[in-house]
Length: 200
Image 1 (tube, helix red, strand yellow):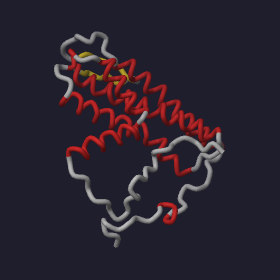
Image 2 (tube, rainbow, N blue to C red):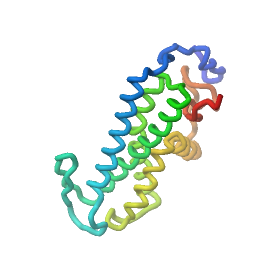
Image 3 (cartoon, helix red, strand yellow):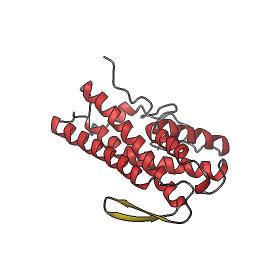
Image 4 (spheres, rainbow, N blue to C red):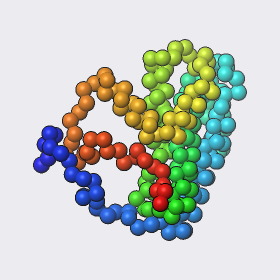
C-alpha cells in the first residue's frame, strides 16, 4: 500500500491498455452526428425556455419537444444555466473532435470524455450559478440578467477543465487539501490539461 508521503507511480507504467485502438470511420461519423444533434437540440431548448419578458412574475409555460413546462423565473434561470453549460460542453466536444480526427489520433479512450463533457459542463455551470447567487449576486430571478448568467454558464461548459481548476484553487484557500490517495496521480499531473492534438 502506498502511503500519502510516498511518490506515486508514473501513469504510463500502469497503463491498462484499454481504449488504445483508434476509432473506426463509422464510429467517428456516429459520434459526430450525436454531438451535432445534441448541440442543435441544446440551442432549440435554450430558445424554447428563454423568458419572453425578464420582468414577468409567476410561472409561465414553455413547450420543449412536445413537453409542457410550467416554470417560474427562478426555475427557468436554473434550466437556462444548465442548458447553456451543456451547450458550452458540446461546443468543446465538437471542437476537440474535429481536431483529433483531423490529426488522425482519435482513440476509443476519449469517447467517454466526449459523451460526458456536456453533462459535466451543465453540472459545473449550475454549481457556479449557485456560488454566484449565494455570495455575489443578490435579488430575485426577475431582477438578474439572464444573458449574463447564460454567458458565464456557456464559458464554464466550454472551458470545463479550467473551471474545475478554478474551483479547486478557491476551495484550497478555504479548506485544508486532502492527502493524495493510493491511486492518485502525481502532483502537477492533470490528464485534461492538454486537450489539443499533437503537432507532429
